[in-house]
Image 1 (spheres, one colour):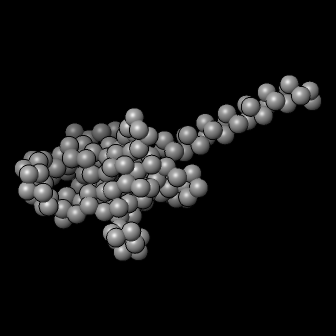
Image 2 (tube, helix red, strand yellow; image 1 turned 180 degrees about the vertical axis):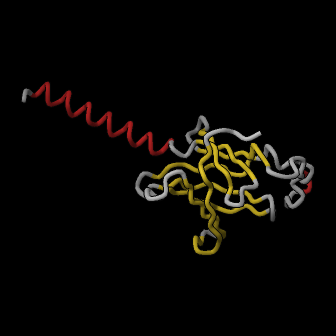
Image 3 (cartoon, one colour; image 1 turned 180 degrees about the horizontal axis):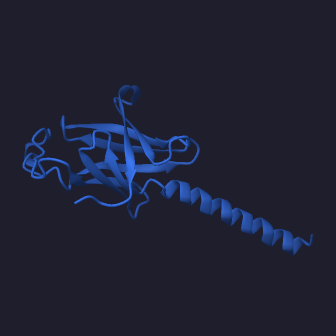
Length: 151
């Protein structure tokens, strides 16, 4: 093979691998139903490359307020529309999204978090919230991918 042809082939392979890596990293974006089926969360990628998630649907009490928020100024905020996932970014080495936080409006607590997928369970996100930097000091949940936004 000629050097120029080899260089083009290697460049094409590198671009394909980068596209695949970006595809994995961007695969977090989407709509998800929480484990109890009570809320739907829209996860989007921001301009800074991190992901956030906003509650876009509630099964019941769509006017529910964030009454457990530790900040009294936010207790009158509606849970519908609330950003509960912030600042997670992909880590290609661990194949997880890390470095962000997740807020639980049911108890008003914010946890450090990381998220991952299991290749044997497509369409399911695994989330781990923890405190004090200790991953085993927390709790896990799953969200299931949805195709359409509920009304």
